[in-house]
Image 1: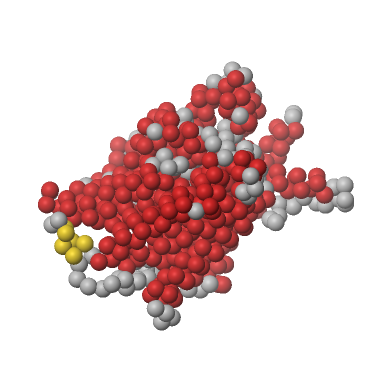
Image 2: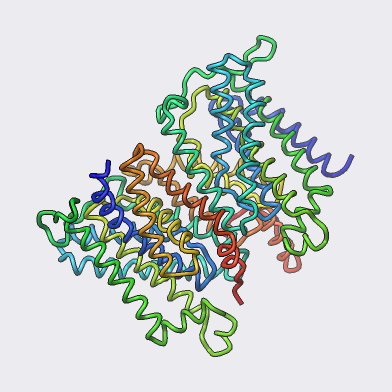
Length: 291
Length: 330
């Protein structure tokens, strides 16, 4: 039993780094707009599928990945402008249902465009897997973990060191005061959706060489990332990243030590437990209203 | 007789006469599915009247179906009794789920019901010894009255629509009296309602348990009508489908439940028949694209439902020129 542990932990950290990126996207949008964006996972799906298609058109992998992230950014911005912005100030439930609608629409459109067959991407750097602490780590997993750490680091630098980053943080803190000093919450909201789409796309592209990409991968990834964000309290970006790794490890351990089919249920059992236990933090976040 | 009573009587007559106008087995099956969906949607609308949305409704629907199917099939009890028992048991489950979750702020309650729904669906697939797993349960006994089988589409039609009308009447009674006023106060402001002496958590719990019971009743009827159940009609996707029905009709509008269930079920049949002609390659749940866009458009333009939205639109247009209110999209 214990011999399996290093392997399960490595797998959990790999998938956890993907969940961390998606969770960060959730936190970004929730912090700025108070909206739970259920379409977050679909950004990963689109990033992965667009990248696979561009690769099939004989573009180099790096170019394909960059174009695909950019395309997903445009889609994130369109989502904000076409679906979320028109309902600005509506009841929070209305906005949640809208993001559910966007998620369903994107999934259905992806099925029409790409079909139900899985797509693959090559490993970024092919080669034999590495052996680490008695577990096996495919090279792509190193990319996943490394890229997620790099992106998270870059994002924190952006928020802490730059003026636009400070504007986003200010908006999450107090949208009304932001308007008083000339920061437009609507523009920040647009930026948040665009940036979250980029995070989602990176996560989707990086994980595809390991898991493959299908039109319906967004639902699972989005929900897991979402659980990670809730574990972190939804308003707290570093905690969401930790939540991502936790969900990955819990899922991996559950798959290894329990019947694999139950792993999906375990994640949501954790979600329920966290929601019950974390009432204070959860309520505090929920009561924040946009100005 | 009040206007409302007259409307209900008219509706009952229309429903009673419908099978004589459209008697093909296919149409009757569609009507029966509409009836079942109406019952589930009414539950969601009751819940919506208190400002809550649930994404676990398909799980309650499934608990009613599996509960009644297992009790009647394996213990040989009468399906009438098992539907009642399964409905009561599911209401009990909803109570247990509600104790911790109803205290959560609205969108965290949505999440909790979503998580609950996924867990129940995973259990349906994984507990193979009990539920038959992904391949489902067969040979579920049908409903009978005094030795006469209700398995035929037409007989079942009158049963399900009788119950749907009763459910409608009950929901209307709940929302138009004291409880309804309390629910509207809660919808407006929970803090405000509490300040006026409304027991917020008690009322929220009551409608949540009632909504689960509605779904479970429909689920029990479904199991003994189709006589075969598998986990897929009780997935997250089904919960979203019920939510769309409720949203189309207006999340707080009882009559809208009937309208939404009918419109979306018919739309689903049309889409299933027509889309493959346009996109022959496409299989699976492509219709989600259409429902997704529909959901976004309704929530942006008619957040209180198509019926209310069309009425408001008609009222808005009246000074300019009389415009017949149509249930159109924007």
